[in-house]
Image (cartoon, rainbow, N blue to C red; front, side, top):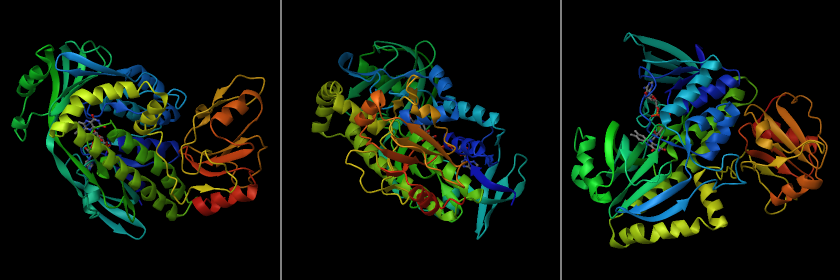
Length: 519
Ligand SMILES: Cc1cc2nc3c(=O)[nH]c(=O)nc-3n(C[C@H](O)[C@H](O)[C@H](O)COP(=O)(O)OP(=O)(O)OC[C@H]3O[C@@H](n4cnc5c(N)ncnc54)[C@H](O)[C@@H]3O)c2cc1C
């Protein structure tokens, strides 16, 4: 074969996958039909789970420097403030990044691309996948090159990260059922002055929709996202000037726009691929699922598809695990996408519903209710767990196993291992457990017991022991972690095996049977 893995599409999903594969020692071929990175900001919400992964990739600090934390949402009714929903550090104690970061997709792609280059990877631009044929032991792809000629490439595996109109999906004949919403969105990158609360999200709720202002880098730089007034729907070549009258009608002309650097309108669909895999081809990101931008989940979900598939594909390509391991990608990520479609659909329908009750709820009740709820810590935690994607779990996956004796409330197989700060050594200060995660190896976390030896798997599994006394004991108890106990985590940070006594035979059995790892 010419390449073990052909990654089609260098949007956020393809870049993340190529980067993770490079870190794991592989050399995927990454192609994109465009001539270079996209210039528009498109998605702009980076969720806590994504930042946790960015930290392992070594790009979180830079993302935090470039982005802005969403400290609150200000809800407006016309030109009058209706309520403020505080968001600052909403996920305190749940994540080292307890907030939503506002950072444009273009910046995310740049950071991922720069990191990829540091690992020796690059994108072959102006290169389009136009055909593929699957055989038992590989895929033959036809790529249109920059000079228009066709190049035949043999790959063992193909990752379709090629967006909503995915060629990989179509060439594999995988259906993409769903529908389009009747509403259309617009996005505009503007320089504007008005009553908006600086540095925060501002939402204008109007009877048939909303306009959202997101603070972006640069003075008075706001990204405006809104619903097109019905009379402008399906209009070709719309300009920002066309939507200005409706914006003025909502805020009584209080906002002055000094420039618009980018304007686009688009119709949203909610669709999910029937399968995420067809033999040697996989679908990830928008190629696999598209939905309304309500909740800023799109880009983040694609990034996590790649995070889920990366380590599995690397083990299989390196001959360390059987191909069956790859079935767990779809088994784990398809239900996540389906759930996401349902929730974003409900949220979006409520946000744009024309019914009189919904209009009333939206403009009068929801703002006040939202502000009040966010003062309650249980509601704040629930909202954060859901939106930040830290609550995503694969409990039903064949890779998730709980041994008998684990008490109720303890972290379980398939869940993201909770973020904890613990003392590894009674003499030293507490350490952030997540700082020892690198996304490259399995992690065996042992609480109140010594480390067993795992001959043959020393380079795959990193063991860490934590004393159960003093401050550690209190923190472990608060996290529902019994003593003694152990958690064997997969490279992506999700619990594979959870139990009380870390007997070598049980650990070995999970590694060799569930994962299929060969020593
Ligand atoms: C106008 C707009 C605004 C948006 N706003 C938001 C938002 O506010 N919040 C949010 O969460 N999401 C938003 N989204 C969605 C978000 O941009 C996507 O979820 C995200 O880009 C998905 O990333 P991806 O890498 O899976 O796909 P994409 O970013 O679409 O990347 C796919 C790549 O594949 C390449 N490609 C396609 N076909 C081929 C081929 N045959 N051969 C080679 N290369 C190919 C393309 O050139 C492209 O670079 C928005 C989308 C649009 C269009």
